[in-house]
Image (cartoon, helix red, strand yellow):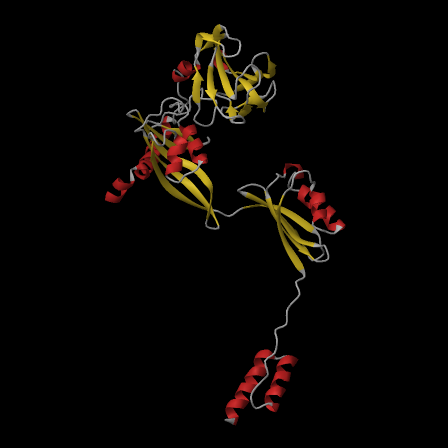
Length: 414
């Protein structure tokens, strides 16, 4: 019995090696019942982890002051941030995390720039700050998505929502087929679609979509297929089964969602405000105020200003004698002389000028004369095809992607 007690005593000293343990041993020797129970020692925190978001009307320095950061650190932090990032581009509502000592000094500051990048500022042993921009780690998987247009889900947005997907994916899919399909008027119950898309996760949570790799849309019995492929030296684009580009000179619509035409091109239409008949030199799209309006083709802005009747108006000159115009905007995002690419934001839907409510009037002129945009878009030739020397590589990639596009049941059977 004495040997067992002595062994336990020596083991305690070897593990602890501290005065506290030696005191406990002395108590054990004095008290045959064993060591008395001691209370845990609570360590006082020397710092505070602050999580917040960028607030409106506050400079970065003022925000640091609000959280009791030492004045010297405030100035040094702002200076460090400016070496890698423009503080004026910090967006209201974006989250940040700051590790601040109780004396007001800061160990680190992190600000989420967007879904892909993070700004990180850290102090070294001498309290000097270094700022870097880091990529936020994400996992990327490939997912197959299928859906159908029906009476219950008459739009692409609703059809994708019904299978658990988000608006971003509807916009991306509509953009893939923007030169081939008018989502405002050509969708019918029974139309089907399937696609293969990159899905991003961050710490196990959904973090957005990547690229659509392949897609198929069956509209009124007509099957449209798109395959993402990057010719050497060029950006990825979408091509049909024969390697022809799906990007036409003009987009089908200047709106990035599924707009509804409320008034078509006409040589004689009764104006809803002026109450007399005159030509309607374009099409009116029903759209909510603030919806983004994009350039239907690359070109140069010739007008970005107020016109009588049209309110805030943008006009763009394109190649081959075309000029497009966008009326009743609530805001304009370009200036005269600006060069724009196809799909660039030019303004937001509004109700300025002679308008009964928010909508977009879209007009198109060819060699100075107004033409019907819907008809003209339909007749536009496709873009550049896959170069002939790369057709074999394209066919290999197309075959791989087509296998992923097969319906779920067919994949399971194979």
